[in-house]
Amino acid sequence: MSEASILRWFRDSSYGELVREVYWLFPTLEIVHFIALCLLFGALLFMDLRILGFSKAVPLQTTTRFVPVALLAFALALGSGLGFFCSAPLDYWPNPSFRLKILLIFVAGANALCFELFVRRRVSAFAAGEVSLAARYSAALSLTLWTVIIVLGRVLPYTGPSQ
Amino acid sequence: MSLLAALEDSPVGVWIRESEWGYPVVLVCHTLGMASLVGGSLAFELCILAKARPAYAWFRTIFAVAWLGFAVSLISGTILFTGAAQRFVANPAFQIKLATLAAVAFVTWLLARRIRTQEALSASQETVVTRCLAGVAMLLWFGAIAAGRLMAYIR
Image (tube, rainbow over all chains, first blue to last red; front, side, top):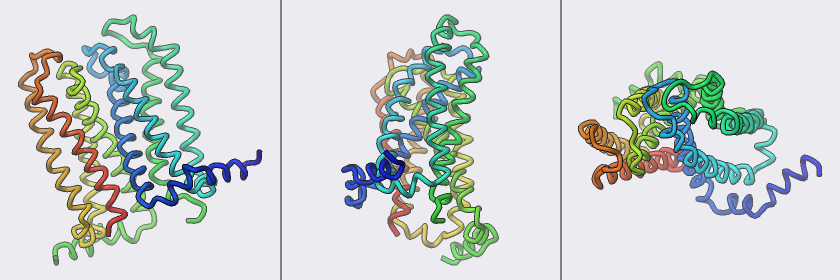
């Protein structure tokens, strides 16, 4: 399948048709996307700032309880974001901000997965004390990546090829 | 209305309207401020709602981030406002957004005061009133975000 036919598949999908035809759906998805963005960023702040070394007295297990919240928020952001994309994939795809945003979301996902697989298990061995350097790098990378992802999402309308 | 017109004619108002990159840059700041302020607040309120309150010291770190986000949102929001003050004031979505933000500020103040005075209380003993305040604050944040987004559609 060529790139153009994949984009047309998204455009002709029933989700894409729905978002184009129901006039209140796009703004509603925007509201969901923004709420999910805040929820995800808040959950990450809660976990990553603790790992970075703030408030060492708080057990890490208390903050990592936000993992399901972050996953739910990401699912909401993905579902609503897919709606924007399906409504006009041929406009989104050539946009450099969009491409970089998607790439960075994959990097952030890989970072979270690495943390989960290689770092978190060992972190729980420490009661409330020190966190490994790798964990702190991972937390700093996570906050940096998501900040840039938010910025790229917001400048999307200004960097499109039609602008 | 002359005050609003004067704001629009001020150097900041003219700059945000006429500069090519001014508007998107300030808008990005407003979004990052929102993410820190609302994100930090929602995480705090979820802890209370879920009866999973950590030590108050930890909330202080989160509050510091939320306050920083508030400062950034307020400054960037004021700059965006000066660009089209008269149109914003007449926009019902803007009026609802400001009213909702005033309400959430009050509820958060009540909530934070309760948490501070009940510091010794264990998280599992969280009272119904405290949890209700947290729930109301979360709903108000959702309302403020919705109203803010709809400002672009309602004129």
